[in-house]
Image (cartoon, rainbow, N blue to C red; front, side):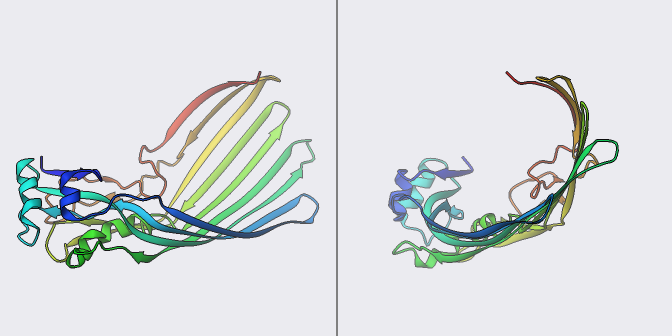
Length: 275
């Protein structure tokens, strides 16, 4: 085995001195209000704060060739053919602050159709508040909680998301057009298991707009047919770049970090029924 992720009861985990996992603890605070200042216009604003203590994450990579590791740990690596290993550990705490809003305007047209416009957004920031380094492993603090794991819960999540949506309905026909903005994200890849601090590769992915469109027709009051396309303009985002000097081979491809998919345009036909 070249690289493994060991569970919390693995002999190497115990020999290294990594404690048993404990439940994460979280506290959440929210404050918001809803208003309808004039007829057919509504908006809501919510502020929130979420604190999570002792989150479970992966450590960085420990190397079997690291002579600073205890001999019994290196022997376990060698016996199992492990070159590098990662471990689960309650390694860090975070605090997330955010603001979410939605606004809508509903109106009727002279031809009897109903239309609506919706605007929504979510803006957040996650910060690292504490790092837990096991006693006796202080020299490995940059490996116990490495920069790639920190990025996973901070910069690898879009801090801005904005939704613009319009709907139009008349008789049995309904149309929807929606576009969503996903802010930029930064991925971090650990290149090696150097002691005391590994090397990393950073890549920032540009913001993207993802647009969906659909048209529905009510065949009967209970049966509806829909045709449409998700990611109408085939937006793939920036391509992942193979990390230079890494022993991990990655083919260049769409990053898919923000929108969660890199499948491009997705046409669909759907038939739904209510019972």
